[in-house]
Image (cartoon, rainbow, N blue to C red; front, side, top):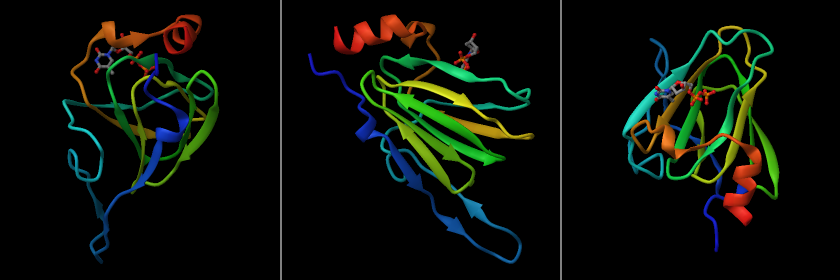
Amino acid sequence: MSPKGKIADIQMIQLPKIEDKRGNLSFFESKHQIPFSMERVYWIYDVPGGHERGGHAFILQNEFIVALSGSFDVRVDDGKNKQIFSLNRSYYGLYIPNGIWREMRNFSTNALALVASSTFFSEDDYIRNYADFLKYKWG
Ligand code: TYD
């Protein structure tokens, strides 16, 4: 078995930034700036100091995460290698393919995490136990 989703597949993507004296504008579109089609957008906000989000992997869903305001870290793990990405600009986003364990931490005050997902919500797509994740990835 050759599991999808290795650390090397994760990409920090710089988004267009249209600067204007009225302020800046950035955007992303399915299959243009991000390498998948979106079915869902959700956002994480009002995270109390010191709390973490994530702590799971997805079987099918691909995601793209943008720090629309504030900052936070995304720790990714493919079962063999780990990396931490810091998100702190609204014109950069992190593409995470399926099959990657992720944790989000160090949320600043007023951090707003926008997440675009390739699938509709399904709890069945989650692997929430790290030992199960390792088994799923590497047998
Ligand atoms: P979860 O994905 O575990 O949050 P995080 O990864 O940010 O820590 O989701 C938290 C809860 O919200 C869980 O009960 C599932 C529910 N949920 C939805 O109903 N729809 C969604 O689109 C998402 C992302 C979560």
